[in-house]
Image 1 (cartoon, rainbow, N blue to C red):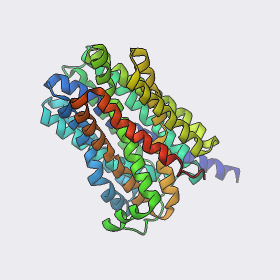
Image 2 (cartoon, one colour):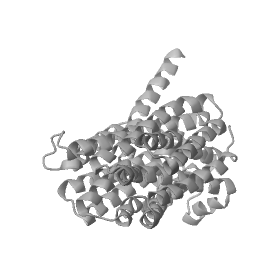
Image 3 (cartoon, one colour):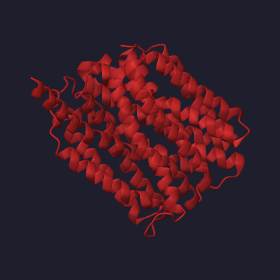
Length: 392
């Protein structure tokens, strides 16, 4: 009996490691925020044009998320994750050979498509491996691993731009071949890992999937995901611009805003993976939202670089666990339609398109305060959502 238990635990660990490496690969999409600032400087783009880059990345979540949920019912979750990794790999190879605006748009589009497929399929794949009561904390740990990639990206680009890494003429684009190697490793490890999946969900039609949004709580979760990713991409993209506009920092210097954001988002994920296993989900979610509100206030009224960086840190820490709680709440409320609900929730990452576009136009109109105001609307919605959470 003891040997059987040990065998199960060993098998679970062998599954857990490649799945977590996939979460690391999922974090590659966050490079778009820092990359946007380098592309903006290289090509002389205005704020609206630069804001279009992350918006295009997350536009594909609107198109591909629900069809991916249906695809999982046909080929399984593991094969769908492998497909997403292949798409991501191609997207990382393209920028190695060109720096033009349309070349970068093509690469980031494919990165967005791959990430949409990955996030739709990887999260329910995890849900089939663990107890539902531990789903939020496990997904948060996955977000911690994902955040490690997000944290490394701005450093690698800054080091490449400053020639502190051997770049072979790539400059800040040196991170693309490095991440491509990690992506190949992810494909190899997951492909070699046997995973027994749950049966296919009952719902298979596109309209039947979309009709799940008629369930009030599913709709609330969908909008919550939109706000989370809008704040995430918005802060990631505009934090350096806030520092540059208010304190005259260069692009290389202002990237500290993105680095601070990911430092605290990474730390928040690590803390959240423990806290969500011990504390009521509603209480921890409320604490997280309050941190973001404090951060937004600091961005509005802060007059020193220290206050601005502290505010960015509060937003990073607060936003670190929002996705996991909302996603877990949605899956646990509709346990018989996990694939479809996952597709809908990941479609909510379309907020990464809506928010940067709105923030770009608001910044062009009234300055960085306009961009911060757009993000604050998202935080206020999450405050409203807090009252709808169940702790179970």
